[in-house]
Image 1 (spheres, rainbow, N blue to C red):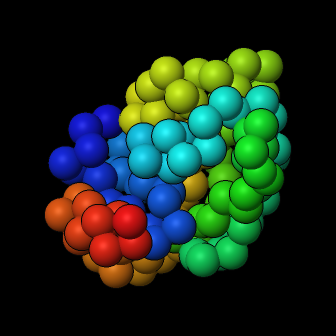
Image 2: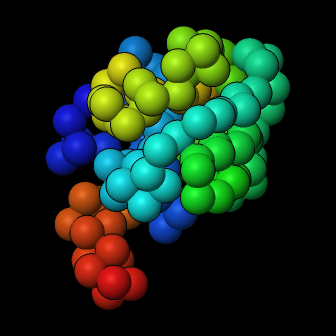
Length: 127
């Protein structure tokens, strides 16, 4: 997925539409902050997630961090290859490093999330 077409959370997750589902991952900035990713815990398909609430965890040599849902709905697919090889997140955070796909609840949109420009401004202000 192209970073320009995605929406972002303040907690460094990205979200984008694909075939009526919302694909979720973490940003390149988050990957760079975590450095060496060693473990990821993802939900099972069928689990409901709520916008702003944790859906999993990611662990690096530096820290363990929660992963937050950018939208409410049902997890319909999980990138299981990341469990076996979490380095795929670092190699391609916007492609092979996707984490989950969510079927959004009726009426849910990505409009309240940050655009790329807004997200980049947030990172610059935090730095």
